[in-house]
View (spheres, rainbow, N blue to C red):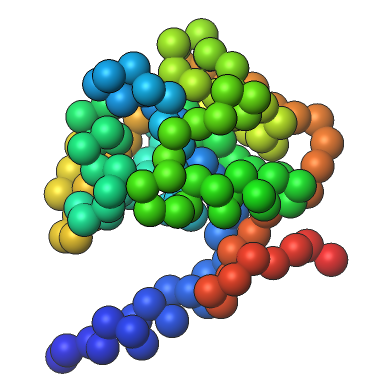
Length: 158
């Protein structure tokens, strides 16, 4: 059976997800961020999380070899950050958007939750690389509503 890739993408889009910005430093020590919605928890003991990186992404050379990165779950009021860091070749973090975390990776200010990770394992995932990280530190924001993505566009909880 062969699946039409557009139909498959549309069907997968029926699953509501949160929106995250993954942050790290490039090999040249430039703080970088990219918007994703491919985040999930994997294990509580040890604390592991996973996100996927498209092999053809302009960010692949930065994020694929990174040893440390942060997964930042965005709040509704951070929609402009999601748009900013989703643009091709525009992934350098603005200094006012982040702080340096305990692992040395950039952490977005105001995120609902941030998970500072060290790479645990990389897996081939077809046209993506699956990156599993061990959470070394985390922070949470006590208030705020999540930024959601559903059906190909941003959504809000009602």
